[in-house]
Image 1: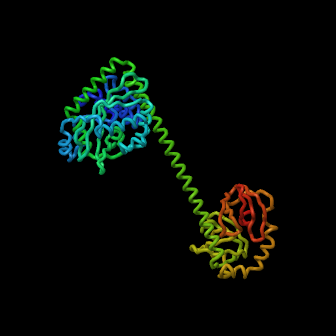
Image 2: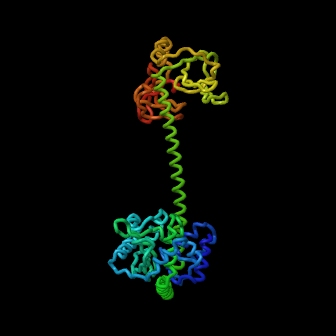
Image 3: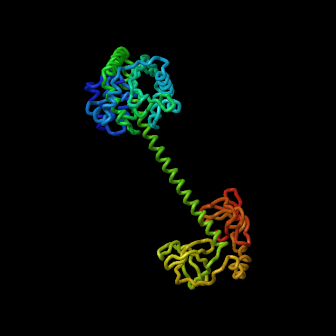
Length: 455
């Protein structure tokens, strides 16, 4: 808020500048409201009806502010900007550039505006669209230039009239622009040095250019033009009460309302974006977990396996800790497949579930390929196949899933996954198969799920 208090003192004293033209009031309000306190609410009312207002023109508060901005580059900036005003004729490159700028600004077309002026922040774009609802048009009266900091750059003053909707008198204004020449020789407005950015400081500025602008604003011919525009503004304010009321009360109030709504919308947009990012991260984590499970299923069916059996009734746990959650309690003699070792624990798989069992409760049975496992345990496998259909879920019945399961196109762990059915969802059992799979319907799609997950 220190910036606002300097501005308020400045407006009361009016020692350093005579003409303050339409959107300096706007810029003050925007900068003040960013502080979000009661004192900022008085900024609009501080500017009396006798003050003209500027849309883009930055202003200098005192000599110390001007000197502090200049740094070591001040001598170069002063020498470049001390030349006399050059009046730009209608049809000149700079006149054409600014005519296009004002046309797109009044229309609120920020995409077209960015072709002649950049950068334009999201906040300034919102403000331009807001202003376009109040404005009919801009009318350029005169354009004056001086050399800028670099070759091909110009410090530009534009004497312009703003035609507000429903207001008979046009508001005289004095705008500032910093125009540069690009590599192709075309002119472009460097919008870093608009009063909007200088007040809100959304983008960094070159101290050498800031110093040149400060020097430019203090030169006699510039101040004389400011005084001329100020005089015209004062005369209109005295003769047109509707104009005076709009500029001193209605317009600042509308700017405050826009700024409040912009901050509200920006906050809501940020919250929505954060929620979407959180949701996307959760879905990715779930997808990665499923892919990992599929990989485990595939590798366990094709690679070499080490089979263990439990030597007593024991628990299959979620983590390698006796305090971890129990996935399932296994009876003595239950066979499991080793995945890896972790200290005093073995990571094992059992009927599609992965968990940990303490080594002391396991005994190694064999180490063989998956095909020999099937051969050596053919009797138990055949028995399982002969009873799986009868022990599976009832055909034609709807079940509530107790686990999240993969729904596959064919009855195989290597088949394409066509869906992911979550714990608590309902499925329709179509047919039990003797190979350990069940055909189901989920969300109007038919597929296969391992029978063991449906018991």
